[in-house]
Image (cartoon, rainbow over all chains, first blue to last red; front, side, top):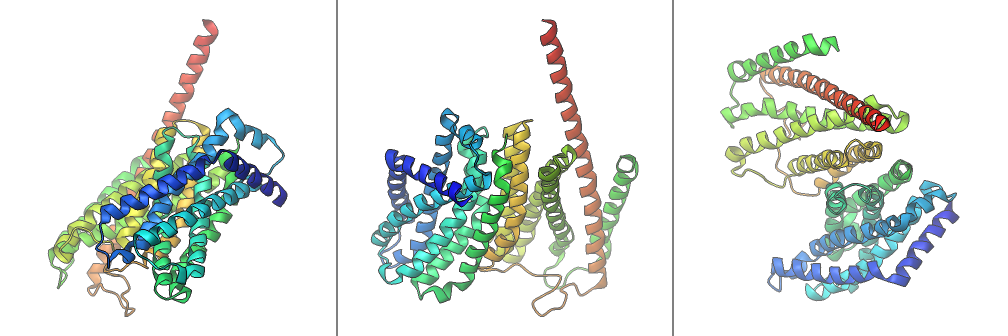
Length: 222
Length: 232
């Protein structure tokens, strides 16, 4: 099963490496959203760092929604998903593979967005980098766990562009709150201060990765 | 079937009248908040009915995925719709109380935030079903969403506590005692809650029946179309 999952990951990442479609849209959309949020909030220079956690996570969620959907639209074209399902790969392995590929792509996106926010909103992230990396990864996994599952649902429903955010955003509120609070705490004192928020993120990750593995077969079977 | 047709509506209606009588005629006016506090006896049972409905959605969704039973699917869709209706009532009656007491219609208190998020999750559920139509796959997607939604409730509950809160905890306060000092307050609350549960039951039963009928109509229509196709 692990080998099957690795096959899926390498397939998805190879497609991405050759087309660079998701990455390109991540970069451009990420930059735009950071600019839009900063301009819309228009903080005075000394208040700007306060807004950094919110801008990071809002940008992450909206950019991520688009990127994750893209992965399944690709599978939908030419009925690739049917072929993948016809192969002797367990749906759970397919889910894990897609999940890992999404986590990698989202991590690349985070690596682009965070320095941008640091520059635009005058935050010193270098000091808090290890803790920040932990928080970003935990939020990333939680987001991807649900997004992977629901992207597979939304891609087959009508009005899919609306359905994915409508279904996902309310479910993702714990990631948003946990991510913002943990990032705030990490920027002001380290991982120890972020304990409550981190446990929310960890619980979310564990519950929904397990739920995704168990439920994915009901989403993709025909 | 016969029970939900004959006895249940009258029982629910009568108990609802009793609870209204208790709320407006019997229970003493709360000392610090005044008359508007009486909405509490409607607001809280609605919130309980909301949670009951959403847990029924999850249970029925699980049974549907596991056994593939159509009846469980109908129960899930019926409970989701009734639950969203009660959740809407909670979100409407809350601000009516909050405006005179807190001075604002809405605050981003943990409980308020949580109720609004729950409303959004199950509104999404209804949208998914509405956009999907009769398709069997849509019922499965909805079932997955119903289960994920309930798994999310405890996590949302913990996460919103990271926000700052002012919502009163009435049944057991932080000091561990009840905020309902007069015995009539508790009696009114529980009678009203039982009445609301009966209404919930009745509404779900009606909605399940409507769903079953629309399934039958769809099947008949398919049969007619198949026959017309064969003769043409």
